Amino acid sequence: MPASVPSPRPVRLGLYGGTFDPVHHGHLIGARDALEQARLDAVVWIPCAQSPHKPGAAPTPAADRLALLRKALAAVGEPRFVISTIEISQPAPSYAIETVLTFRSVFPDAELFWIVGADQVAKLGTWKDAAALHRLVTFLVMDRPGTGRDRRLPKGQRVVALPSPRVVGISATEIRHRVKAGLPIGHLVPGPVAAHIAKRKLYR
Ligand code: ATP
Image 1 (cartoon, rainbow, N blue to C red):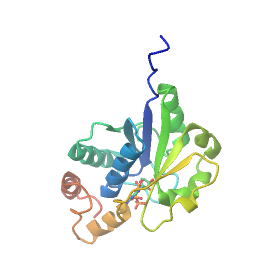
Image 2 (cartoon, protein in one colour):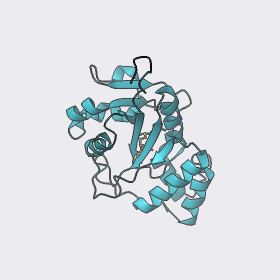
Image 3 (cartoon, rainbow, N blue to C red):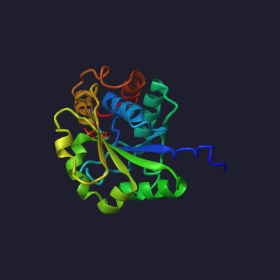
Image 4 (cartoon, rainbow, N blue to C red):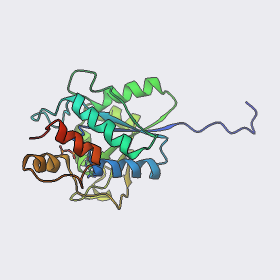
């Protein structure tokens, strides 16, 4: 290649793992901010089979969580939001390191990021093969109401705070509790997600 032709920059992939039980506006706002602020080429939403961080709680069947995620992303209409079924097609639990190693082998030249909420930061060191994981990805940490920001970030690691001024204090736990209590959730999730939860009688 002649010296005057700039080589293309590596593709920047944001891997966004979670239980997404159900996906909600907090997830969508955070993913949008990560996409734009970290100049990602794509956010790959990766629903887990079962989070190693939530061993006691069996999640809603993966097929339902996946259907909710598909409906949420269709409602948003962002072509750079894509879903990977890599974790839900494997037996639980889902470990980020294994997922990241697969992405690394499929996209050897990509720059890999792992998107997490600020509530996860204090626990990052306990993730399986944490040191190897930190060599493979840069963590993008979204604000999350109720948790601190930069002062909580581990020093010397590839961890970047994402200021996310619109992020809202929504959790999937709150949504599940509201559904169980018969309270509305239409303001917390995209309309098609609320409709699917009602139709499938989830979280009752
Ligand atoms: P639960 O209430 O069941 O624990 P959750 O709402 O935290 O669920 P997860 O699927 O566990 O949702 O979250 C996936 C990722 O999204 C995690 O990194 C989490 O920190 C982050 N996240 C969840 N909700 C928000 C939010 N409102 N703002 C920013 N990040 C969030």
